[in-house]
Image 1 (cartoon, helix red, strand yellow):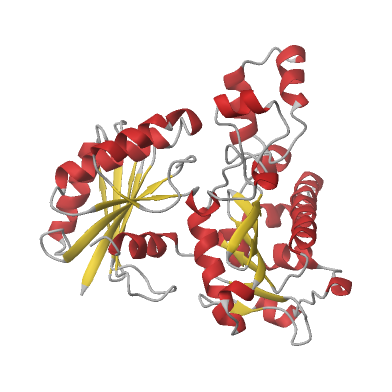
Image 2 (spheres, one colour):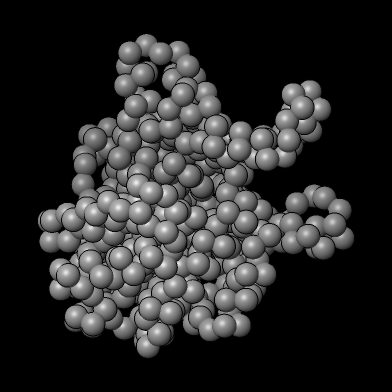
Length: 397
């Protein structure tokens, strides 16, 4: 059996999985791991496999040390690169700009092209490059493949992709809507036609990726025509810690009135806003506990979140003209029954009818939660971005 090593390298962490690219969407990976607190004295490596968990705590100087430690631990449990049939390494890269629309076999030129895109993703692309550089050094005999979060949205229609600002300024600074969570939206949208028993090019759908980061997409016949995130992942829906769409004048107001710096405003809108900014928590399980306890701030935060979600669902129904399916995915979308129900409640006149009993069912499998009479079918479809990356990387093996 052949496997792909999937790496998601962050600024202070490395997530990895060894995945069978032929596995089903809900199958567990052969092994998964997480390196945390890179560059700190209290670094930690966690590896999960076959129902077991190994945890090692020690200083992890940098990404090289973190990945070396991970490979050493994989060898110890008999699942290292020399012990299983690894055919490729798939790397998640957040921003591909207008350069990359499809997975790309990594060479030195591709790395430099990703490096050139750092101004569009200053927090993410440098960490992605670190992971690529280290993995290529440690595993030089395997094909390394970059899979881009923005790739699925590379060819959005101009009316959806462009902002109404000066065209010369926008072009000179690469300002446009890029969209994110593309690997997840693509993965989900490819499963929905099978659930409907219809050809993919005949299905119009709305996909809702609702995790701590959240985005929605309108997909017409397999091609995205709009998505909520923009130049950065800050735009669109209200999220766990991100504000989503706001009046851009708020930024100028805070700079002038509150004497806040650009970095302070950046931190405020990305890390101290959204549900957390309104309620103090960003975990929806904690939010529900606060709501049940009568906390008014938590109830307000929830309603702001649902209002933004319904606003974009309505906009995408108009953009698509006909909607065949709406799908929920990611941590909140897959597990929070209240969010799913409230996002679509009272829309019977638009052909959307939620079956309350089906909505309460918990499962790792894709499932229908609308009534049999609902013209628009509503699904919960678990996402598996690592499997999607593994499948794309395996194509280069």
